Structure formats: structure tokens, C-alpha cells
Length: 354
Image (cartoon, rainbow, N blue to C red; front, side, top):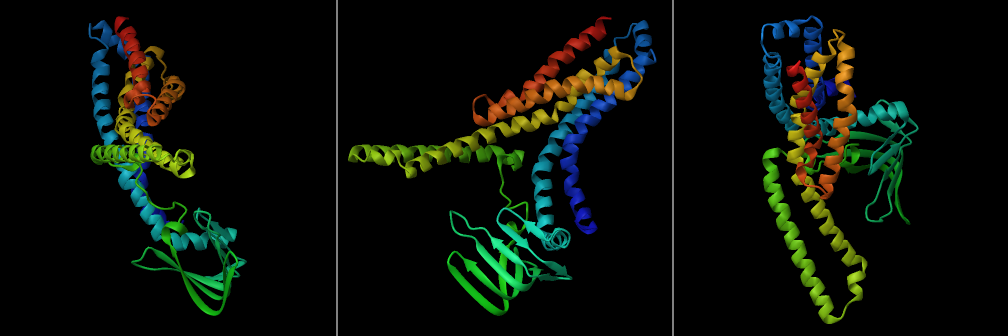
């Protein structure tokens, strides 16, 4: 990527990076502050005055709660505005990206489109071979030419491929040309990111309830259609058709629709759980750092982060995986947070009881 493209990407990448950086930064801050306070006997001094250590931990918990709310918003921005912006910048810069890849590697490949060249001279592609992969079992379209040039069509979602003295082949059909011929490639095929499709994980939180209702209606319609079709086939004695590929395909469509509904129902719980990891990280990290009484930042942070790494994240991923399949309810994604809550309350009790 060129410098201008990277600069354009940075605003959209910022929330994507922050959704991972904020919880770690909050835990690092809590470990550093309370570890140093405890090592300097400040917590002991507070106790000697008859003041509960909660007077020190309470403000940190309140601040982490507010940061958690902000992190939920950052998560929502990252998967909607951020991802869409990255995709748009990549599409706008796809011509430069393709040329840079061809100059260095002599090839560029995406899921639907690939190009190989012998050399690149300025904007001229020498002896290119372009393959447009077909869909639904169709043979690929293979283009070869003496030279070619790529041009981004401003205002259009296409990339022009100008071929000179070449041929076009699909299956057994071959066509040759001896002048310059233009071939249009949709940008979503030329981009490695592919077509921009709004999956449940990229749907704004405000839009998810409407999507859930629409998905439930679609599932209900599919079920009614399948029931009516099955009744008709059974009545007419066409039993074999209920075991054919067409019927299995329609049943598969219903399964896919149900899977999307489970993902939609899980997504709000997942984003809130991810955002509120900040609060639960501080709930565990602050009292643990006080008990460790170590002024070394990385030792304290490592001791706080290790149980989170081996306990919290596996439980989070387990809850997300099972909730998306519909095996567990959507709120199962909070398993990791509930585990941290139990550990944090136990640690707080030990700190206060001393």
C-alpha cells in the first residue's frame, strides 16, 4: 500500500485497533497503579487510618464502568463504520494495489480473479494472463494478450482491462483479437476483500432488533413453504422427491436462516460482553495487584493477565461458539465475565478482610 492509502485507512483502522487495545490498557493501568501503591505501603497506611481499601478501588471501578460503556460503542463503530471504510478505501485503491503486487511478485490473486505477467513497464503489463473464475460449475474465462493496462473507472465500481493483441477463451470457445479490446472487471472481484456483505457481526446494534424480526419472519415463511410442499408430495405419492437434491437444498436454506438468526441474537450480547471486559479486568486486576505488592510493572501485569488469558478468553470463545449454533442461549457469551466477577469478588473480600 502507498503512503496516501495508509493515511486514508488509519481513521477507519483506529476503532478496530482500539476494541482490542482498550481492555488491555485498562488492565495494565490498574496493575501499575495498585501494584505501586501496595508496594509503597500506601494501602497499609489507608487501613491504619480505619479506611477501607474500597475507597481506593471504588473510583477505579467506576471509571472502568464508564470506559466499558465507551468500549461497547467503539466495538459497534469498529465493525460497522470502520470495516465499511476500510473496504471502500481498498476498492478505491485497488488499481495501485494490483500494480504494486505485479511489480514485486508478477502475480495477483483474489477469490474470483487472478492475473500473472512477465513484466511491468510503467502502466503496461507485458504478456499478461488473466483468469476470471466461473461460478456454479462454469468454466473460467482466460484472457491472454501481448500487453495490457489497468484503469480505474472513476464513478463506477469497475476496473477496465485494456488488452492488445490477445485471445479470450472459455471452455471450448476461443476468440482472438488483434487490436485493443476492453474488458470490465467488477471491483469486488478485483479486491482481495471481496464483496461487502453485511453479516450479523457487522450489523449496527441499533439495527439488530429489526434484522432479528425480519429473519424470524423469513424462517416462518420457509417453514410454511416446506410444510406445504411436503404435504403436497406425500399426498401425490412423490416420496422420492423428498430425498432429492432439490429438497435437501431447501432444507439447507432453512438451516442457514436459523444459523443467521442465532448469530443475530448472539451479537448484542457479545458486543456488550466484550466492552464490559474492561470493568471485570479491573475488578480482578486491582485487588490482585494489591495482594502481590510488587512495584515491577510487567511482573504485576503478567500475574494479572495470565489467569485472564487461560480462563476468560477460552470461556468467552466457548460461549460465543455455542450460542451461534443455538446450542446455548445468547447470554452464554457472558460466561467469561461471570467467572471474572466471581474471582474479583473473592479477591476483593480478601483485600478488605486483611
